[in-house]
Image 1 (cartoon, rainbow, N blue to C red):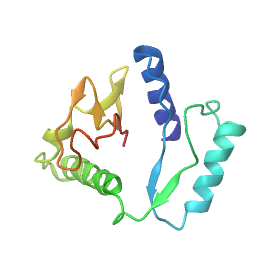
Image 2 (image 1 turned 90 degrees about the vertical axis):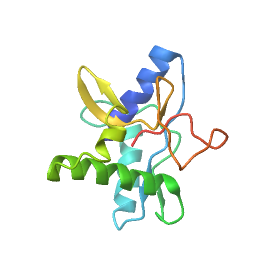
Image 3 (image 1 turned 30 degrees about the vertical axis):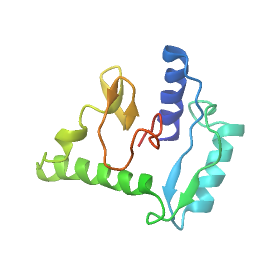
Length: 134
């Protein structure tokens, strides 16, 4: 997942001259320390596909009650689960065209891509992030 997000940010920079840095947000978890250690290793030592270059910070762990982005990630995961496990496309149909895609393969949900803006009750125009990759 870290590599896919890094590639997404790299493509944004290359194709759209948009040199943003990424920030990974996670729901609080007992694996927090291990994930932060892995992120540092990916940045400084690399992993099997190379090093990550586009992160602003190590992963941040937040209580899902404290931020709407974690809640949004839960909703996206739920819609994917309902679609693929139970054939219920009610929520999937709203988000299905908002995934990062490369070579015909979907990788991650993009909340605010300029090419595919998605209406959401979580943000208004003033507070909406430019992009969110879930």
